[in-house]
Image (cartoon, rainbow over all chains, first blue to last red; front, side, top):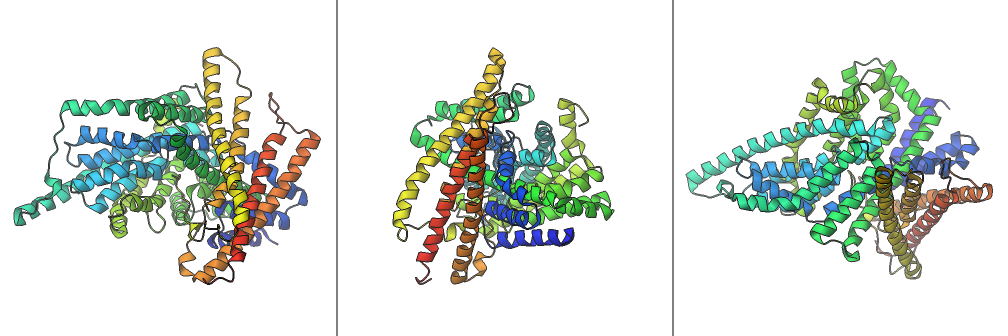
Length: 450
Length: 184
């Protein structure tokens, strides 16, 4: 059988079992195993479990559960609400300041927790009711939180970035640093939109008030004293210290990424015990259980995705597909757009972990041949996958918002997030014209050339 | 809380297996609970071991030759051992795009086939893990590091985890069969 036939059969059967509803981890493992039995020597089938174990027993990959533990500890405490409260106090005098406070709180919380849905849930549960109380429309409030939450897979310690670093054999430290500039760019774009949209909603409310006397809460101006503002800071500072401390440990050369993850988890558990008195077994049980559930699910998908990629590579499917893409001699930008569109479509159905591990062997060689910087591409790909978290039909963050703010109709949430999808596309375009936004910072810290 | 994905609801048919397979369930549920508890403690221990690694190297200039591998064993063990408990809650993420388009009867058949296929794969994997474990014990396999711990330790955790997962899937397949003639 030709490689083309085997490849089509491999891809087709994967789609079939996945869309039948078989758990992704088992589906990938089962298809890989069947193709090993059918097309590979029997000795390779005998090493199937050894393959999976050796792929999973990478200390870089195994930092993922510890980063999840750190995120769960922070996500299940009141840290999100405190962070949001402090930022609101300091930014509320700026037009749209409440929305901006939510964007900033999402970015900071995402950097501490490393999870998009956790960020949406932690900041949104305090932020959305406050924004609604202050007259923001439901769709606008939901859009800010859903989009802000996506920064969780872009900002370090992003699980998606860890996987990309492993799949693309790129420096994890460099990738983490490369994501900071683009994340700030997105924060600026989201902030600018929040200010513009606030002014629009404010102007409409004012016109309605002048016309019919209908008062909207958006017209009310809060006043907080300096004393009140400073009173909120002590609760937030320890977490900012945790965030910067972990970064210093990693980039100061004191700890490897996995040690950073372990250290971050221990510090996060210590902080929630000291500040929020979360230390009894009954307090810790939900944190540990949710960590374990998420870690197990993710690590099994990762292990089986790596087995799937190994079989794809052994049967020359990935190499042949990559060679075919290169032989098309597409212009580099058409190649990039085509690959990103494929990622968008895959994002309708698959989680980012599977997209990265399954597609990396196919898409990275053509991108390398077209002289794209793979660190830069990792950032671009992550932003595109972020879009998958907020665009229909799957859009996980949309459903998180629907869960924490069920009074906002799903239709309003979807319309509310669409401008942010547009802003992310704009962010990708800006990064294509100015790749230095991603590459400058790692070059400064770690030296140019890699 | 999930990093870009969630347990998108194979939960629809899910968990209520109690009345049909009560005896079996009574055995599996406590095992899953104990294993999950031990696994979560393993994760916390791994965090402390890696933190100790940083502190001992930085403050006392000790060499760090065992911490990484010890943490790997703990985390790999935790992941495999708790796979069954996650499956018990239908926590392994799946694509459910077409479930809404199918009738309840068609969905029931689909879920049955999915569980049988999952069971076949996990049982095969458990069997191969057992062979690997046996080999590691007989041949005395060790890792290639300076610490050189025996590989039967993580292999035994992988084998036990996959056996538990297969038992969990048998329970779920049995539940489908016991409900087969009940009205949809």
